[in-house]
Length: 356
Image 1 (cartoon, rainbow, N blue to C red):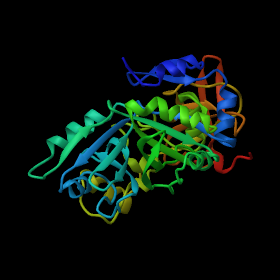
Image 2: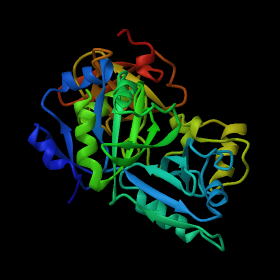
Image 3: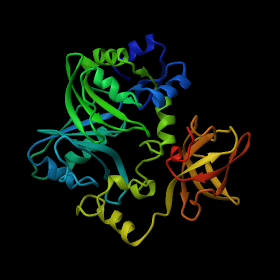
Image 4: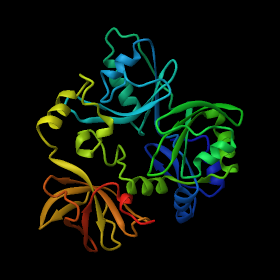
């Protein structure tokens, strides 16, 4: 079982540990309301070391990635990042990711459980290019600050807060780190890529400057409120990016890449058969992921993620719904053991219409 270098420290301050993606991770620290409030009002600190990171080097790396990812990698300036996806030839998602351009390499930050798949897929497609792909997931940690006080915490550590989608080199607790502007909710957000040996020092420094530790359960609530799908829950190899509304991950002008023909055909000539939408439920029932969504007795979709939302005050879910049943306010029902859970569809993000 994999574990973060911080796990024992996290357990000592009250972390409840769960298993996710083959890793022992902190689900929470015993006070979910306080963790959520920290993210909304000050700053929450998440340990995302269980995410995957690939380092791509070699003089042909830019062109290689450009031909295998959905977004414009050739147009990516050094010090910037871009959201993208890797697809199969049918236009279905192998993974989504953020690609960061550094001076002499590209860093791919991927969801859990996708690093090896993408590494093997990319290596199999190298034909004459001078490209080397390394899996850095076992040697680099990943910390994430999410909340309005994030820039202040970085400032107290002598680090200027990078803009969204900007990545900079910095020093934290005497260690070299990469700091990236990375929103994981509808909040100011910053990721810190840290060598494993430096994780404890960096974690402690961030806590001492005012960050509050928070677990995976809190991040799950925040990202669902923001309408952000996670690979492995809302995204998988059955999903075409346009179904999930991932338009920011796609360049429609860059030219050829794996899966491009399908994406272009849907974009210019057709429409996805289903779309990712929100559902706001009327009572406190939480139908499990995978539950069928029905309207007028007919199955029109299924739930992929669900939480109780402090911002909305009710359970909210992400669900794929058939076209024709995606208009906001459409009445839906999900059958549960305790009776039907009734709700209405909503556009994403949920928090765009929420009153703080």
